[in-house]
Length: 358
Image (cartoon, rainbow, N blue to C red; front, side, top):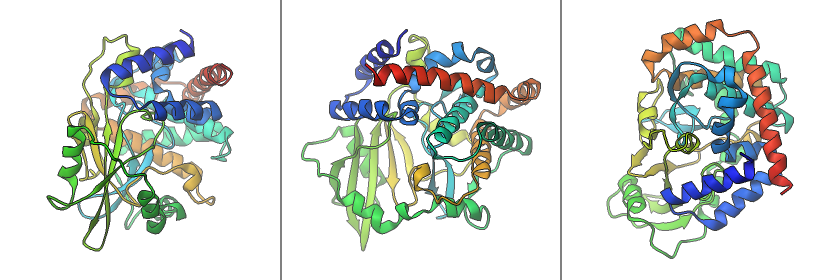
């Protein structure tokens, strides 16, 4: 199936599961044409069509509850119940039972594209090695979350750049255009359940963010509370694109809450699934991190190693699958991840050329 046809069919499927915001979808289409890295982020549905065929050897592997839409910019920070800053995978919109290798191949392919865009300066082979070393190390040692307090000072510095300054962040939140219409009841109830006080007055805004989810409803509530601003977001969820890619044979279940709860990591107490809405706190250090926002002086090999480790932290949620994963990983040839990510980058580039030249 050609990419344009696949996109039309996926968006028609998406529209049957949620209300689409056409202006945001048009913006997504423009972003997809600009550069190949945003294109990758925006087209997980196509990835799930291609990967089992294009990277067939890599895709034949033990299954577990996987992230799905994993890439080098799906990482961020949050505060846990004790107020500690934690770093890890940011969202699980596309979580689904998949071969464990698919998360690694997508993460590595995204690193290849980030390198091509000069957002990472390591070599492709080094990126794959770092990801695999981190992943394998976590499987061996049993998993450990990245709490950025007394440990991981290098990562704390890399994750707290100038663009996450509170003044900058809240200025951006206040600049959002107020929403005059009512929002769906599920979104409103979800937002109000996370506010610090019952009955707190707030103003609503429509937020344009992300790429994979761009086109779905996303609302922000901004309120003054005890001397400062607080923000809560509700984002519409749909079944994983894996369901669409399987021709409707897969489970329509949303796995967001399950993968978060089961993973070997520290929960964000302000992220909750409410029906078909994911609601969360927005704050300067409770957001996704883009590579361009990170300091230029950083240990990128160490960062990619951490991404591989964190991927395994999430995979540890499927504890019974881990022995099978270890055995499968041990039998794979040395450069399997680099080879698989290369062929997927080539397939992605071909689709991108078709899209931007339409």
